[in-house]
Image 1 (tube, rainbow, N blue to C red):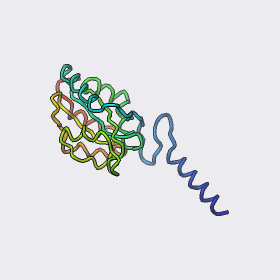
Image 2: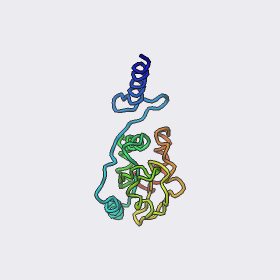
Image 3: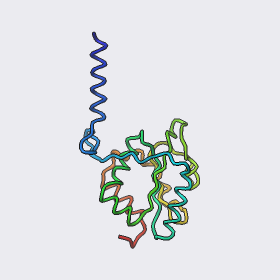
Image 4: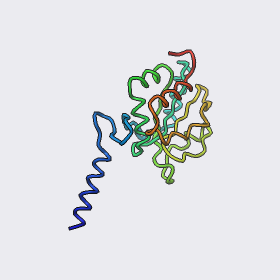
Length: 171
């Protein structure tokens, strides 16, 4: 008798934790959009190289978002990037690349050579955000791996950081 009750309560809690409303994740105290763009690329390094080449001709920076669809912080950041406010910033100032890194913090990571190429030796969690010049210089070495709390950051804080790292003079 107790086991079915416990199972029912657990199922109910799972449903509450996964509830969404109009494309937004329902979490106490948090309201953010959510997206799952971290597809497994056949060659993530080539995707980054293509973005660097585009950035060289467009006077933009490259925004490499390294995450995974299992990660709510990765999905939250991707959701913000898909909103009109962020999409306008990205369109004007960045070449955006999503890189699926699996679960590097448990030893089951992939595409980690992308981060290592730009001087990020370890990904302690997801997401990580690399902002690169068109020449491949990492501009945010001090904050690249600090995005693991993206779901709890405010929209304005995320926007301010990405704006501060964007090339100046572009609107």
